[in-house]
Length: 107
Ligand code: SF4
Image (cartoon, rainbow, N blue to C red):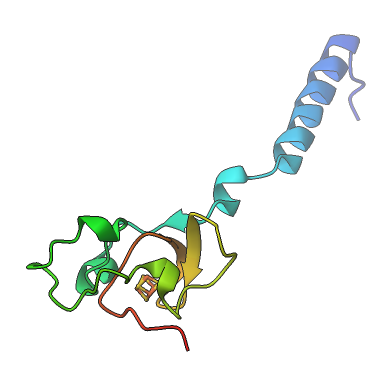
C-alpha cells in the first residue's frame, strides 16, 4: 500500500469532508411541494385556475361567486395556508384562492 504524502492526505480528507457535507445537506427543493399551475395537463382538463376571482362567468358558468379551493371539501392541509394539498391533485398543492370544476361543498 502506498504511503500518502502530507499534501495528498490533505487533498483526500478535504474531498471526503466536502462529500459528507453534500450528502448531509437537506434537499430543500425536493421537500418543497409542487404548486399546481393551470398549464398542468390534469389541471387543464378540470379547468383549474390559481385565482378563482379571475374566472370569467361566461368561461365557467357553473362557478358560483363563493366557490374557491378554500371552500371546497376536497382541500386538505392547514386552514389559512396559501397553498394546500388537494385530493384531486396528489403530490401537488393548489392555491387556496384557486378553483376547478370538481369543486364540492363542505358537508
Ligand atoms: Fe380546488 Fe376543490 Fe378543485 Fe381541489 S377539487 S382544485 S380544492 S376546487
